[in-house]
Each structure stands twice: as structure tokens, then as C-alpha cells.
Image (cartoon, rainbow, N blue to C red; front, side):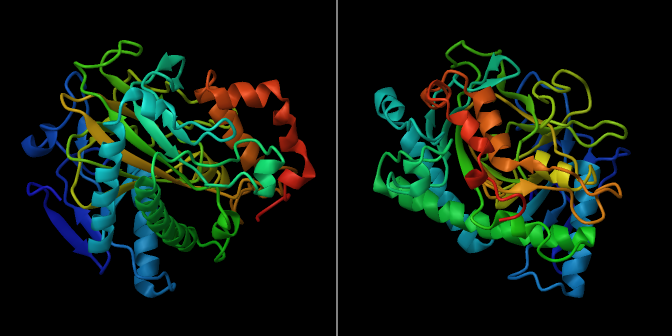
Length: 398
């Protein structure tokens, strides 16, 4: 935490900033140390997030329940919270960050070679990803479920299934360990959400067996050194994330902004794109980099499953005066699963159909990467219709 942030400890596992601000967000009137990392050209409140220390395991103890309720309150108020990294997690992050920087320093031709026609894994050049019709400046390596060509799903041509085109064994090993560790944190967080929402254990985690977890390894160029394809100063445009839960890490440069929940406002990205939502309106909160922490916020599927109790958080990234590196890990349902509202969150009705996660994920990729070879091949070969096949759907949790 920043030295300028006062904290109060609530129980064993919650670190709560003390705020003098009169807003719904736990924030301060822009402390100098925190505000100094905000990208130029942006107007926003500077947030001070609640920080939680995850237990070794979630047992349902009194302290677990207290923390779970506090987390739900933080998400409903702020749209985002922080989780403190353990020392081993810090070491994993540092190794992953170093590996990321080595990859992005490679010559353009070597990076462009890291693409697979079957999956959306691999390299995404700056300007290739599109948000609300405008190119984003982020440079990305996407880590997806790494499936060999002989896997029956790959051999059968399932949409989005294929190998991850690693540039070398070192990056595969380092980022594989980091993704697995974030996955373990994701499972704990879902267990705590179940506690906090008073739903039966397993109500969320049953969907994430063999989950379609993936991670975006990101580099943002300095604002004065872009390729001119996007909007001045914009790294990634305003959007909500399509999945269940997002766990992110950032370096010391800073660039993340969130739009906290507002009464009466709700986005349903699975029905209509939330890209560009509120992008140029007031009310944004800057999330300053806090060493040794992860930021966590709900995605669209969490909003759907909780009937809006936990809303998907709009966020965007601004370009700073220096290049910036970050990770965004997505803890997701199984590709075949059909997610439905949680017990007690279905409005008193049993839904006739839920949302097939694999179709939802594929639709998001088609929207964000209209010109990628993976998209062109999927469309040309007519494989999108496979998503309606029984083999790719389990009708419920996996």
C-alpha cells in the first residue's frame, strides 16, 4: 500500500482504507503520491481500495464469512477490490513480468509468428484489437487452455480450441505456473463469493471444473510513441469483461480506471455490447498501482448469475508517459457449460435457458478480433454452428 494510505484492520483478513471522501467509492481527494501516477489528460477520483488477505483454504469459518460479506459490500460499492499477494505469489508475478518484457522486446516478425489458426491464443499486435469500433493500443499475448493437435476437441474442430503458440519453453513454463496460481486464487474467491451471497457451496465452482481460464499478458506503449491506429491517449476503450471473475496485476506505471456501480445503471453485455459505455462521462475512478496486490472485479457472467447483485465493472486503460505492463487473468466456466442464475437470484422463476459460455466466449472473440486469422477460418469453415451441437453443451454445470 502507498505510504499515504491509512488502513484499519478488520478481522484477520481485511485491510480497509480509511477515507475522508463523501462518495460511494472508498477514495480520497487525490493524494499527491497516488495521483502522480495517473495518465495525463484524464480527470478522475483516485481510489483507495479495500485489500483482502485470502485464507490458506476457505473452510466457512466465522472469519471467512466476515471477509466474504465485506468483499460483497466492496464490490457492490466500488466495483473492484484488492487481494494481497503472498511472498511466493510476488515471486511468481516478478518472474512472469520479466518473461512478459522479454517477449515484447522480440522483433515484430518473431511476435507475429506466435499465432494459431485454431485458437485465439498468442500474439495480438497493437491496433489489432477493437473496442467500440476503435483500435486499442494494447499489445497482447493471450494464454488460453493449451491443447495439443491430437486432443479430440482440437481434432474435431471445436471453435476456439487449439494449442497456445508459445515462443519458447521458458515463457510457457513461467506463465503456466503463474496462470495456475491465479487459478487457485480464483477458486478461493468463488468459494468466498458463495459464502458472501449465502448460496450453497459449489453453486459457482461447479461451473469452473476444467474451466476455460485464460490470461492476457499486456504491454501498453507510452502515449507519445504509438502507431497512430487508435485514439490519442487511449490504451483500451471502456468495456466490461465477458466472463466470471477478473484477477489483474499491474506494474508501477499506472493506467487503470473503473466506473463504480451507480444506482439504476446496469449493463448487459451478453445482450448488447457495453463497449464504449460511459467512456467520456464523469464518475471514473483511477486505480493507482499498489505493490504486492492483485485487483479483482466481477465480469458479465457473474452479473448474470447474481441477477445484478454483483455488477460487471466497466473499466478502461489510459496510456501513460512510460510503457506499462499488466496481466489480466479470467477465471471462467467450462466451455461447454450453460450458466444460470444462482439459487435465490432467479427472480422466483426457473429460467428456460441460460447462457452457453462457449458461444458467449466465441461471440466476444468474433467481436473483438474481426480480422484475425482465427476468426476468418472459423467463419469460412462454418464451424460456428458447431456451438449448437449437444457434444459442445452439457445443459448445465460441468
